[in-house]
Image (cartoon, rainbow, N blue to C red; front, side):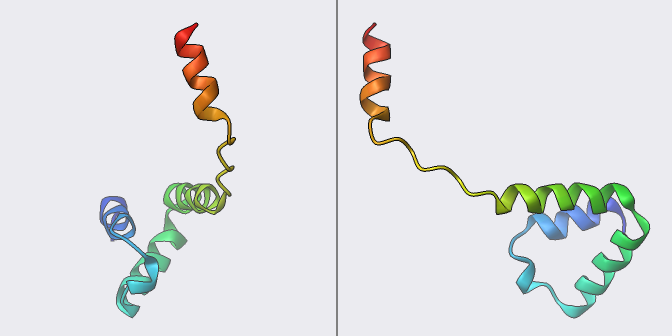
Amino acid sequence: MNCQELHAILDTGPQEKLTAAQRQDIDAHFGSCGTCREAWAVYRELVAEQIPQTPPDLERRVGEAIDA
């Protein structure tokens, strides 16, 4: 498996739907490619981040800023 194939598989959706063979290929690729391993580690960290709640008065503040 090369880097493009790895990204194509991982970009398609939930990793829970991967076959055992795909998981094995991915693990082998991560074992030999530090660039992909690091990139996907950063991606997983970003995805795990909590999205802050929108301030309740944001719409009003934007409207006021536009009017000003």
